Length: 524
View 1 (cartoon, rainbow, N blue to C red):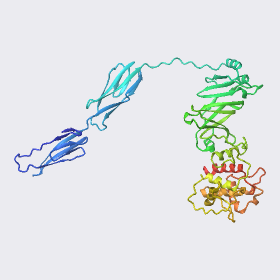
View 2: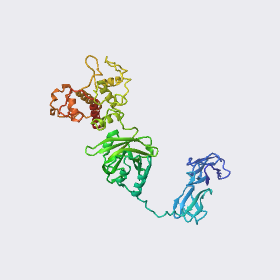
View 3: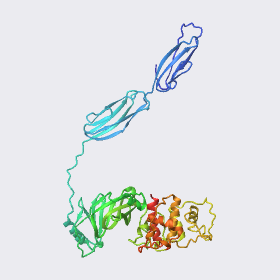
View 4: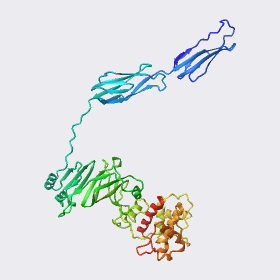
């Protein structure tokens, strides 16, 4: 007997002889997940599969069986996709999905309404000629159908390729000579990268802008007002090679960590002789972020900050430069331009101050000043290590407020008590902390050592302090810390060869020490 799911049929048991006294029987199924049977012999189909229905007499345990096959009928069919646009000769595959998923018979047939336009075999459509056709799939069980509309076109034949014309520099020079104040002249480079030097001589000192369109959303912009007069310029190559890999990734990551970056290399070598603005694509997904330009000092293997520009909605950023170099563009949520007017470009501490500021290790003394030559106080020092630790919450700690000269509400209050809890810094025997006192170089070294010990960093490094003529002035309690700091190149001698352990620590020195500490110990 064959039943569809949810169908039922009643079996009849015939007892022999017909005049047997006991006519009672019992019914059972050997697979009730497929078919069940009640005591009246009514069989109910539950799920696809096979089952044996057995009837047993009460008298004599005589049996008889009926093999039941349950099938899941098809309820529908769908096609993916439901429309196709093809060129002559193209093929595409249609996927027919028969419902339900557990249907017993999933066989289908395929047909095309117009075989001269498109044929179909086992779901593969072949475009034969221009026109329209309907591909139909039909289930063998139930005759359900689904269709796909097919449009076939003749293949597009592109016109013959005509290479773009290179710039006519004679014509460009004429346009520039006739340009009026405020005019902008755009030069389509079309693969050319070299520009004759007399182009810049034509606009020198004039309110005329030249845009070199290099293609691929890369361009150079030059304001004639920035080009010096009475200067002879040689021909220059303005080629831009993007996504180069000449700078070690560790050098880039040392700036702000593992953030997005792009390396570019310029074909020109050395100074341009005037200011140019490079516009380059950095991805629409980066719109609203900042492109921070660093040039690579290959000799010292470091990056030096140049300028920043906000990435526009089209994914491009514009960056000013005066010389050609290997560059890294670091994409960050913030500009790397320092707000401090007292941190001059090229100062020995500039990169360290930028590092400490960008990593939230040190702040300025005001919104616009850092005071690099200012003295580092004990309060500033513990605040630095508290910042380095991420300013953990100590509200649940039993602080005891042991320092009579530290207000718990002071800007450095949490840092002082955190330092006491961790052993980074302690107070004096008279119960004071003396937060405003300047901190010496050996005291700062001791705090560094204490923090490294608290964090479980390597404390095995030892420097040769005997090389310093004033090594004997190091306090006994600070000798281990000073040796360790020197061994890790954190605290070195001055230009005169002295270590000056009792000298005060400036904010610039602290920034430099902390940058090396963070890079050499924390990040490793």
